[in-house]
Image (cartoon, rainbow, N blue to C red):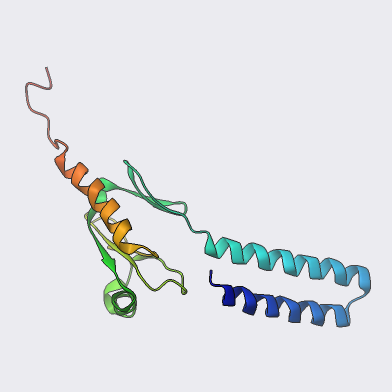
Length: 154
């Protein structure tokens, strides 16, 4: 998260602490202020720590995961393209994990027609590197044999 978001959040927490401290007795006020500060810190860290990972089995965003067999293609997008995609009607129903302070990202089109999400739209500071990693794994999936011949079943 950018430093200025922390600054804005800090001023918000400070104003909440001042408001609570002005109206509540000292012990309860201190406890309320600590709770406000702790929850605000936790929320700020939780928003900024979404983990994106690519491995041999699939693509993960936080606790969400999709296996390579269900991914059709991937596209890295600059901030202007991501803004266009996010503000168009084409993203309706897509799985979206974006952070407002990161403009660029990756769009994964899915191959599974039964999936309620036609695409995954994910913000990334390094969309080209992420797209390359995804495409390497998609290429490995395409090289695997998809059917079993009669000789292999004996």
